[in-house]
Every structure is written in C-alpha cells, then in structure tokens.
Image 1 (cartoon, rainbow, N blue to C red):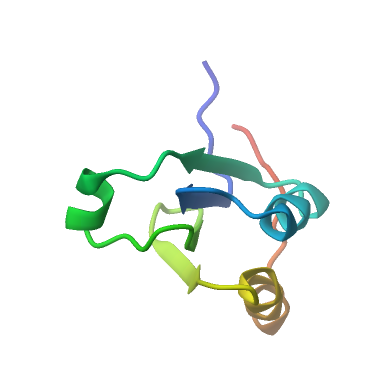
Image 2: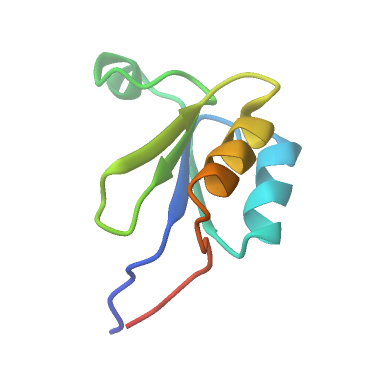
Length: 87
C-alpha cells in the first residue's frame, strides 16, 4: 500500500460544484462526508473547505460561495504545487 502525502480537500457536508471543479483542476483528492452532530461538536462548519497540507496540518479554511476563489488565492500566494503525489 502506498502512503499518500498529497494535499487534500476535506468537506464536512456537501462539496459544492465549484469546489469539486477546483480540486479536479488541481488534481487533488476530495473527501466529503455527510454532516453530523459529531462534526459540529468537533468545531467543523457545514460545507466548509479544509485544505490539508502534506504534513496533515490545515493549510487553509474557506467557506461560502467564494471558497474556491479563496483556495485558489491561497495556492497562488504560496506558489503551491497542489498535485497528488504518492510515495
């Protein structure tokens, strides 16, 4: 089994089409899961976009209709090579 050290987008709730398109264009993994009381208790916001870095830390949190634009601005600001890499 290959270890996955790739940037990933996690969405607690529904991934909007713009987010799905952004991850597809960047060749990122998109993980969306149904909203739950446990996610709320853990502090997640419904339908937020959590960009997870290679080291597992959160790189960017984006919400609302501008989430994809926020993520793109973050990626450009830091010149991130956001593409899937398996080791």
